[in-house]
Amino acid sequence: NWADIGVLSASGVNWSDIDVLSDAGINWSGIQALSVAGINWDDIDVLSSAGINWSDLGVMSAAGINWTDIDVLSDAGINWANVQDLSVAGINWADIDVLSDAGINWSDIGALSVAGINWADIDVLSAAGINWSDIAALSAAGINWSDINVMSDSGINWADIGSLTTAGINWSDIDVLSGAGINWANIQDLSTAGINWTDIDVLSEAGINWSNIAEMSATGINWEDINVMSDAGINWLDIGALTVAGINWSDIGVLSITGVNWEDIGVMSDAGINWSGIQSLSVAGINWDDIDVLSDAGINWANIGELSASGINWDDINILSSTGINWANIGELSTSGINWADIDVLSGSGINWADIAAMSSAGINWSDIDVLSTTGINWADLEAMSTAGINWTDIDALSATGINWANIADLSTTGINWDDIDVLSEAGINWANIGELSVSGINWDDINVLSDAGINWANIGEMSA
Image 1 (cartoon, rainbow, N blue to C red):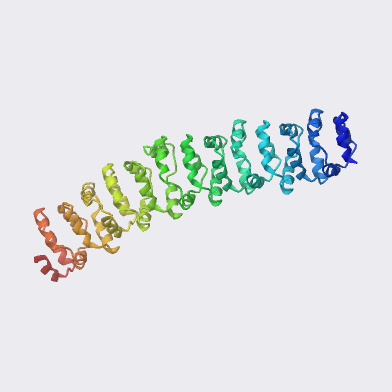
Image 2 (cartoon, rainbow, N blue to C red):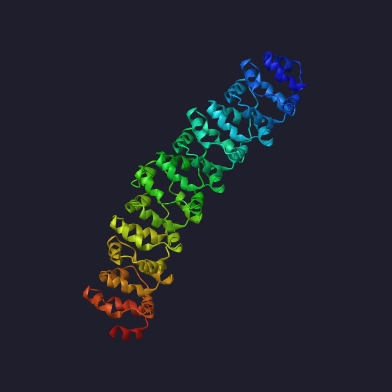
């Protein structure tokens, strides 16, 4: 009659004798009877004090013990600090799965922290092959995730995060970490421990709320760790997930404020970041409209020069247009001293010049086209403009902003197809601007080129008018 165990305690029984029970081959499944009989589980403290061999917990599992009884232990006020004894005794932590399967109330893990548990023991859990997917049960039970700080303070081997991923952990729980006030500065420990940053993919797939990147900045995270991501071969496609998840792109401003160097992009380049990853941004369908947010956040666009120097694939600017980018920001490019010679790279990579219409509607300052000429732009690309179906009425905007028409000579030198002048007429160009052509000293020998190209001279009426 196991109910008598209460009487045993009251009478001062030497509980170390339980070792003798084990050595003698006792059927530990009887412990279930203890619960049914209403045993006072506070007595487990006495077991520890008496030096019980906790490795027998394995025997308990093998015997089919009903681990939900551990709740009774908590309710009875057990001193969970004794869990250290479990580790020292070599307990098979894989048995914690049994706890989960039995529906244990994991909120009791809070008691572990209060009792001063040595969280470094979590390494033992990994080594024993624990099924980390059970961490979901921890969240569901209301575990206080701020305890993860305790893990860091005790020197936990964060490299084990690989085991978490392999086991199928529900990474969306990281939101709970933020809600509990976790100190994100500990992410540095992840890098120091050599974490495989490709696991960040799992975060995205799980629907992580990326807005937490703000907390990372606020806590002084060392953003140079982004290099580790590149070195580890991170799948930059996930930046698409960042956008879909509603990331606040203005946080890129925080990067600057915290010293990343965009003025900060410099640090990334100096550290050897693989800028080719930006191509993946396009492939992933990133919403380039977000570049507006970059401007609003005060990014120093002059650094676009560094992008060119590092071999960035300018084809990506096509994506900017197709997604409806607000081209008005090109004004900021000029103000910040951008090297417009880089626009040649744009042409060479097949940019869709039809987007010049978007530039006009967005209020671009067309006087900047002078800068294009000064830097040696290849005007032959005017053909590309026509082929792409550009709305030539925009040439009026060029005149209105005071463009130096003398540059039309460059058009001839580069072998422009003057058939395109028909397009000008069909588009309703205001030919009065031809006066500006003469004043600026145009080489009228170029009219031969017009003839050779088969221009429809009927348009001369419009010229006279």
